[in-house]
Each structure stands twice: as structure tokens, then as C-alpha cells.
Image: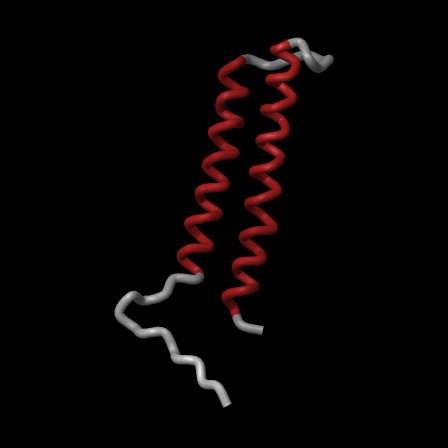
Length: 83
């Protein structure tokens, strides 16, 4: 197996679940604040930081995947041969 799929898998396994955890936590805090969920809510700034953190993790993931699978624009794609 080549190195690119392994690095992409590792990045995906680490960053995407972390982003989801940030988003779920922020969503629960928002639910408590709006009164649709039970529990003790945190401050609004903490909820905003969690949303920003979730977004940043998704953007970092997308940037890393793009860097892993980057292709040079000057190099023509290999032509398919049919037999």
C-alpha cells in the first residue's frame, strides 16, 4: 500500500471525529441555552469557540487532503489505453 492513502486515512480518523465532537458539544450547549435540552449550559463564548473549532478542523482536514493528492497542472494526465 502506498503512503498517501495511509496518511489520508490517519488524518481523516483524527480530524473528522474531533470536528464532530466539537460540533455535537456546541449543539448541546445551544440546546440548553434555547431551552430544548436539559442540563447546565456554558457561556455563549465557549459555544462560539466550539463552533469555530469544528469549522477550523474541517478546513484543516480539507487542506491536508488537498495537499496529499495534489497534482501538477503542467503534467498531462496519462492516457488510457484500450485493448
